[in-house]
Image (cartoon, rainbow, N blue to C red; front, side, top):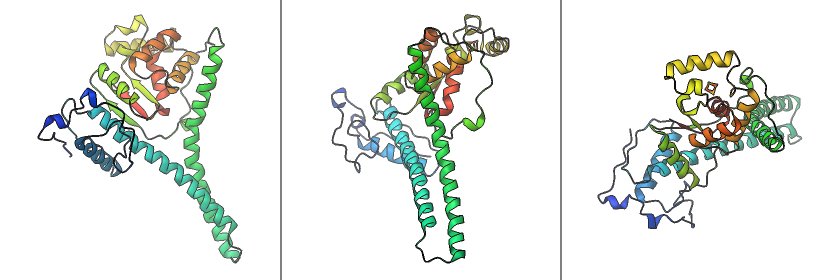
Length: 295
Ligand code: SF4
């Protein structure tokens, strides 16, 4: 368990407004987390500790007083970690491809048995690289689909309406490293979204909320949670919820993946614009997102 305590002088930890200027001369060794300002010692320590914890797959509890920039600090720490892990995965794919290529080419001196052994080893490495690359490409494919649909949508008068059919095939889902930020209130998600904009990171973000927050069907929205779930299920099964149509839900999830919606307020606004269910669109976008805000 890690605890970060304030320094003797609390003002050392608080970001005064006048100090909130972008820190342009970012020396990687001094600020490896791309913190948008010159970090205070306690902030740097917090980011270092979080990063070390994540690298070791640990569990930690960090505490820091109000006004010390902990939201921004923790966003930078975890997103740097995710960025590094994604980079390592791509390097792993490239390295294995390169090793496989070298083994296949050989140096011309191998006898038949050695050449056969190298060939088998090269095939194993190629397979490993293909598998990992395929997982990365699933996300790319989905994002490309979203971009194309959004482009086509701009020229369409009416969205084609079909029944919301079966969920996506499990094999088409990617395996992505995800960060989940759970908060107590909707306004804290807005705070996270605001802080995220101050960083250089551009993760795909989805905000998840209950039906009470995201449902736009007046027959369901104001029911107590347990009743809302049953009523929603009935309406979906009988095809009577006008907002639960595959084309519309997918289009709203495209908006989420393209970064048009970020916090819950954005999802509700787009949901009303498109007459589409934000509750299910968020869940459809979820497997392809790296950052999840949950209330
Ligand atoms: S499908 Fe969506 S909009 Fe329709 S009732 Fe359920 S949660 Fe509400």
